[in-house]
Length: 465
Image (cartoon, rainbow, N blue to C red; front, side, top):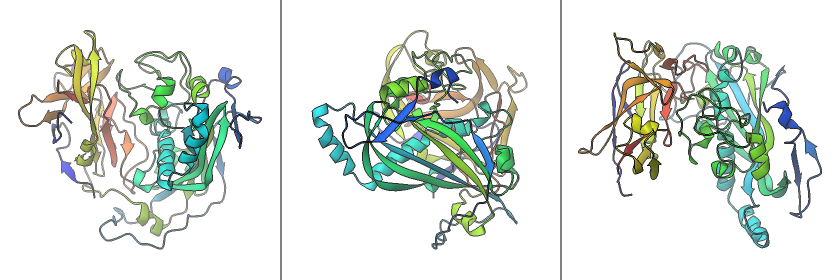
């Protein structure tokens, strides 16, 4: 069980003590140019012969369904989380079939057979990790779904501990968009548990048992090295400060519908405009696979609910925020150059211009209460609270005095301002909604959700130069 440190709800101040060492839908005009071609080949020079169209618009259907078989194993006493309500909740299954693997183009031709054989000989754990990295690329369009669809809510991924990856067959060498890869087919499955009224709020097609919704995706067959291969063409920075992505956090930004000219605070690209759209960049460097995450409303099954329930409810009538201390262990030290016009310099996130040595780390606050922490609409420079401050460089409002990061006991703390928002659903239970209305303009953390600040986000560091 995660070790959690409690901190006060409402207007709160968090102190994170880090015990680490300082030294240590695609545009129609592009569809004709970006057709996906794929075939299994025994000869790596064989050209693809079959054209596959881009995925159709998302489809909602209603069809009979059955509850997935429940494992005969029962939850252990230490892991079992009791239902926080008397009565039934709602269950939604998730499923996606795809294939993931390694791009061979970047190896010399004379080495490829040997490299492919070595990769094919990897353990199941190797392929499962690649599949998980590809599934993670669905995050942005599922968790920020209301920005892509009118009158629809979030359909968040379940906690990763509930992800199940089933490998299919053996690895095969394939050519996709003239790119040679070695790929493994797999099926992803998981289950969402929530209250009875939430499926309809998230997606009307899921209002009744048996309802089905297919959410389409176009993904890179090799989910590694995305930033190195495609630059920021596939990264949706909308709502984030500029300079918030790096090679390690691209999964929270990936959006296959990004175009090269989508800029501005609400567009895909805030840091710099790329020269290609996401689909153009993928097709030019690694290829694409087309798939969909299928959401299916299941009949109520108490045994299944007991297996997938995560997140104890510690307060039934109020929010209760806790720091996920395990996330603080995800840290790294980098060097970054800051010019005199840097937003980070203007906000006091670094102590000077030029090359700085930065300790980046994750910080996550989990709302384990049954009520949302509802800070509410942003009121600029409200003299009664003085809690919101507009930052013209980042072009959004910050909630002041929310977090304080300090390394050791003698260094000066780095005080940060945040947009308090619900970013991921760490709980999976009947009192944790699937949906919420919180944004940087209406701030808060939904019950069972977390507010995450991942290593790589602008100012999510301590300057240890």
